[in-house]
Amino acid sequence: MVRKPVMPSISNGGYLQGNAHGHLDSMGSKEALKQEKIVLKKKITLLRGISIITGTIIGAGIFISPKGVLQNTGTVGMSLVVWSVCGLLSLFGALSYAELGTCIKKSGGHYTYILEVFGPLPAFVRVWVELLIIRPAATAVISLAFGRYILEPFFIQCEIPELAIKLITAVGITLVMILNSMSVSWSARIQIFLTFFKLTAILIIIVPGVMQLIKGETQNFKDAFSGNDASIMRLPLAFYYGMYAYAGWFYLNFVTEEVENPEKAHQGIPGDLAIIFQCFS
Image (cartoon, rainbow, N blue to C red; front, side):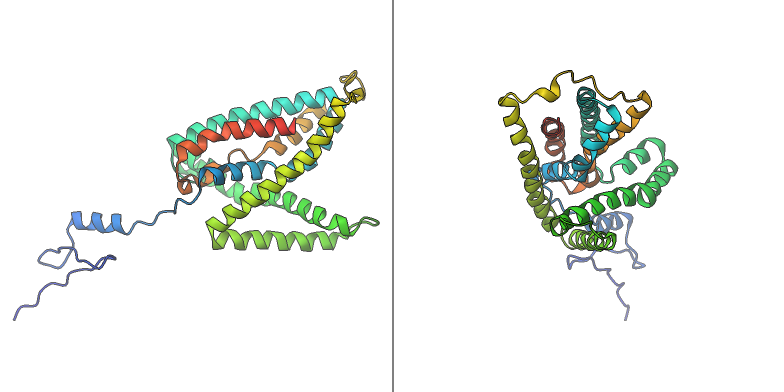
């Protein structure tokens, strides 16, 4: 009695035809790999993509940076010029990344584009610099600001203990990590929820200011370019504060493979940034 060769099984319960020695032919191997390919689920809609961009840009930066911009420019007029230039530079960057996101439909952002253009070594160095220096530093700044703002209502009459700020910061980072690890959908929903409150906070600041301007309170804009003389050497610091406030316009490109319609979502980035530019200015 002759034994029949074992037919290798695949995930859908069927069988692939093998040869006389029980091995898969090349065509069957390709089909099996195609069927078992792991891909990211496309769960980021247009609204969720907009909320990612808006929620990332409108963060701790806009509440921290204005003081640095004004201090390093010395005048109200010059600070408005810096804000406008930073907004235009960010808009140009957003337009470039929108084009890259529709041409190279891969997640990874900076790493992916450097890998495609310059090869694996620069991309490898870039991703490790991001992981070891850039991302931890940015997360620390945002998280510490979060911890301070959460505790300020409870310490109105006294200084906030540094240990308390660090503890709230650690709790916040841990919760965000757990949430993003558990579900893309839930993290996107909470991103939309928090984006709404961030826009509300910006409007609470903008609306009273516009009302004061309508009433004629424009004394701060008279001789807007005269006042404290700021050194030209401090202008780079002013631009640094301004660009930090606009940082985040490239984050949708990190999750391109999870976006339902990348072309439509990336085309909305410049318009989204234009709205934020109006809010900041």
